[in-house]
Image (cartoon, rainbow, N blue to C red):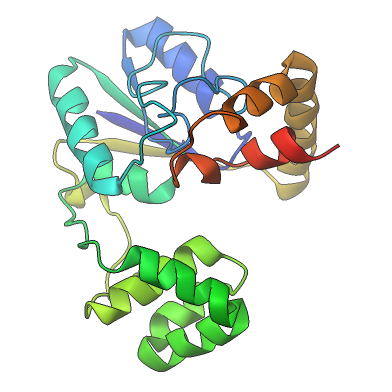
Length: 230
């Protein structure tokens, strides 16, 4: 297997498309947003066939554990799998046999973070799991909630060993990273955002936002902004 990762707008989709044409690879997405149907513009879905793209209704929640199961099935069924990410945790879950921590009182901690505020919630996390607090910014409420949820279960989002090496993979894998200068990425992201708007991202987002959205679908980057901002 080949596994390709990189930052937003680093060129993953284009490189994967070239590899698909040249070696007949089957592209498998490791992007949590791309899983959702109905958002091809906002999620920058590829214009060629790819697995695990647009397969989940916006009304359904998606967990890392469920994605891992789907990804392992897709990888095992492909003759030349090419994993492309995307979302770091999804990428690692697809490549490895990493155990996914259990779910706890997610709704409780979401309500609690809203009640006491992000700064106070982050201070609480620092008391319960200092290592996790060092990795989570107070403004990142999604990870803050998850960290508090895991801390209550005796788990952590900051394991002692959280780096993915080639020998951690389920199948023999060549892992490739695309690395571009930050100023180049900034320019590409600005161009992509404008291109999304020109392609109809506002209409796509408003149509999705007016329907039934799961908690995870609502967190798709750009969806709320394109749907609600003037």
